[in-house]
Length: 524
Image (cartoon, rainbow, N blue to C red; front, side):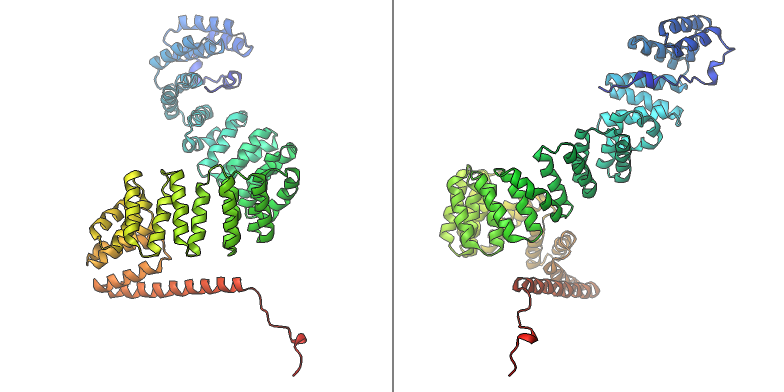
């Protein structure tokens, strides 16, 4: 339920020209008493005024306002409803009734009355403010932000709603407005440390990383004894692509927290992002030592080892992890992958089957097991593996895709077609099923269907040169020589770009020039 300061809300008792009414003495006395906060006496005067003018909507509205100040909400609402009955075009009773509904949490009724009030008076900032408060309370961020400008003067006096409005701006892709509100509140020292932290997390979430790090730094400065805030600051620096800044935070934190595996894991990530790979491996190793039952620590460590082609070390560490981890599923999968890289398919199958025994409800073990057979050309056994998985597990795009691939290899085109269509339905934005369906349609001369699938691949993955090549062939067969020629050119360009990237990566792996300098060469 929304809480408002009624003293603020009812401070401006402006009732306009309608109240002149021959300068009614009871009304004037009532207003004077109201301003002096003598609400009971003011109510008596307004009651006397109503006896003189029993059908005056403005007086009914004044009685409603006074009863609201006396916390007689039921009576106030009756007066507002009577005022609306007497003069439906008077905006104030709709606004005040909507306000009472709003404070009671009756949002649908409040919105109805406030929208009527707004249609009668677009320029009343209180109506916009109440609507903004309603939308903020009901998590309707886009609608709340539309009320920001006309309600701004009142939001400045309501830090709680101003804070919520700043969040709404960030959540609804209005970062400039959101940051402006945050900075204004910071300038007035209206944000608590907890609110600053909450805002930092949200800024990071919406990828305003520089703004996020500023707020995390503020929180760290306010609470220097809590390591978690330093950890979060480091995450924000990493998200901002400032691994160097993250390392400066994490290195002393790792000394403060020598048994904290999460700190070492994050430090390893920071070193890796900064291309300080020996330091990264050291940090990952310390994370494993600090938390030997957590499989994620071994996965981080061995992933980098595998990237560096240090597969024997990775295998040894994974095997150690399988012995000590609480749940070895992911490590069994990692061990199987390492064994496949060495061509040890029987050992890999043992690892994958062990993973399946641990968690038969998880798909990846079955896919990995099928791949061991596929790489050896044992497609019938791969097909049986995936058939068994389909009988046990819910429908899944990846499972249907691999089942379709193996069915194609076995010449079971009808089953492949159904499976690939299922994969496409379950994962419409995944490239693989579209490409394989395109191939299947092309092979069976269903050129329009093949064209549709390959064109979808190009939309999802513009760099997929094979799809462009297939399209160039289809366009040629359909007689569209211009499109065919353009697609062939695009294919050649993409293949050249990919070749250059591969060469560049190879050069990077080979390292710097190694020839001796001219000063070190002995003259012949």
